[in-house]
Amino acid sequence: MKTKKLLSLLLAVMMILSSVPMFASAADQIALTTANITEYPVANFINEDGAFIGMTVGESITLSGGKVCYDSNGDGTLADDEAVPGHFEIVDPDTVPNLSGGSNNRVSIKFVPDDETTYAGFEALRNRNVQYLVQKTTPVFVDENDTIPVATKLKAGDTLSLSTLSGAKVTNPYNANEPKILGASWTWNPKVNSPTKTIVTESGYYEAYFLCSGYVTLTASVWVGIEGDTSDEPSEEDPIVYGEVTSWPTIGCPEWEPGMTVADLTLTGGEATVEGTFAITTAATTILKPNTANSIKIVFTPANSDVVMMGETTKTIQITPTFTAKDITVTVDPDFVCTYEYGTRHLGSLSGASAFGIKTDLPSNIRANVFASVVVDKDGNTVDNYNKYLTPGEYTARIAISIPKTEIDGVGDVQLYNSPVFIENIPIVITKQKSTGEFASLRKVTDITEGEGQSTANIQYKFSDKSGVDGYCVLKVNGETVVDNIASAETSEYSSYLFTTNTSGKFTATLEYIPAETDYIEFETTVLTQEFELEVLEPEIPIIPGGDNDGGITLPDLDLDTDGSHKFGFVNIIKNLVEALKAFIQQIGDFFSNLSLDSLGEVI
View 1 (cartoon, rainbow, N blue to C red):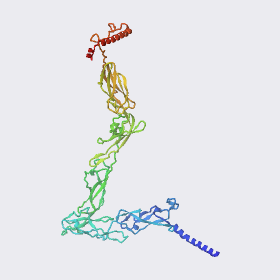
View 2: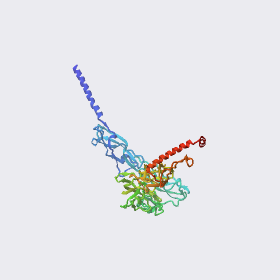
View 3: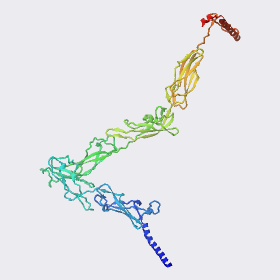
View 4: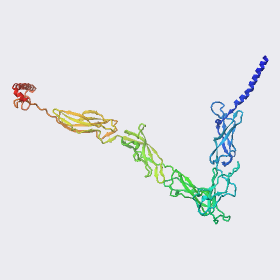
């Protein structure tokens, strides 16, 4: 029994061990993707002339370089020392690119690892990181003796479009695939003769072209005959001479200057297969514009008028005359100091070189704007010189000379001079503003009330200055302050001061402005004056009825000398007053005791 159990255990262990290598082999193969590419391969041309429409990918290019890495450390990076040995191949070497001459063609690539047991490669179809340029192909004639298409004859007066073209079949010269005749056909070249508008009245040559996408355009001069007319038909004894422009001239364009025209241009170079001349046909008086494309038309004229020109005989060339804005020379009077009153203007809006003692070599017809762009105070702090008035003090400014564009006929606005130009450390002094206006108003004193014992004058004044002064006013009468610390009011109403006196005479009212150190305005007149006169009336002595004279009560005469002085000084005056008072009381008593009822009624 023990032996059977042992054999069973050994068999089980062997089965487990036999299955381990199989699972380990599948788990160890690492699948690579394009995410593992740290360096893409490069497409190299096999032919030094490049790749052309009709060539297969394998005929056009080979791949070189490229690197694939695996993050074996698990640190999230693909390091060069973790590169996977292997190489890149072209997936589709027999594929012919589409007829898209001049465009970039993407290459399908695959990575083949050296150790395919450990790594699994991948493919990247038409990968955008691996491209190459395919050029237009020059087609070839199927029959080298049949290079000029044949045109059907026309009736005199027909349009050129009624003549059909045939023959001169062409094909792609590359034989990677079975050569086939290109599907496009010959047509009349509309750039030379509009087929629907050109009226044919006599036999002659007209240009046709073979236009096919992805291929170089072929041209040919084709004979178009008029029915019944064979006199001008070419013969072997009088062969046709063909001409063609092989390279067009360039235009020498000097540095642009105002007033430059096409007449200032010159042609250089240019070749043709026949003798002739190149010339600019754009009007010589055409004004050239700087730093922008100008279209100039050139024409080739063969010396022999019988020559039949193939291809274009006119060409439009774009030229861009360059112009660099010129520098200006600036000089500043070293002793010049800009001085301005506070509040007269914002320094940022000052304009003109004369304001800052600056001279330039600008022509008289070029106007420059000169202004203070940055202003700093004596402590080196930048101050706002555009939106605020600068307070009195010393400043240093950076002056900007801004030169606007100049309008030139036929060209438009041109920046002829560099702008802006900055001049540093121009001294500027802001002084207090001198004001000829009055700081306040003091009305003429006309509101006067005269009375017994005292009189009153209404002195009206106002101090409503809004120019930013911080001082105050004082109202005085005959030099004595009557109202102090009068502050400027927001209202325009007058204030009043009632001046009262018990003495008649002439008086002088003054309103005086007491400036503060922080005032930025200095008034030319700081004292306003108004004169007025007051008369105080004497009080009247009342007369009491019932006396000796007119029935009224009279006071006894005071014992006075003839010169008005008292006989016995102050004592006699008191005695006289007492006696007078007694007499006055006695007279009142007598008056009422003698008064009858009848007389009382009359009085009432």
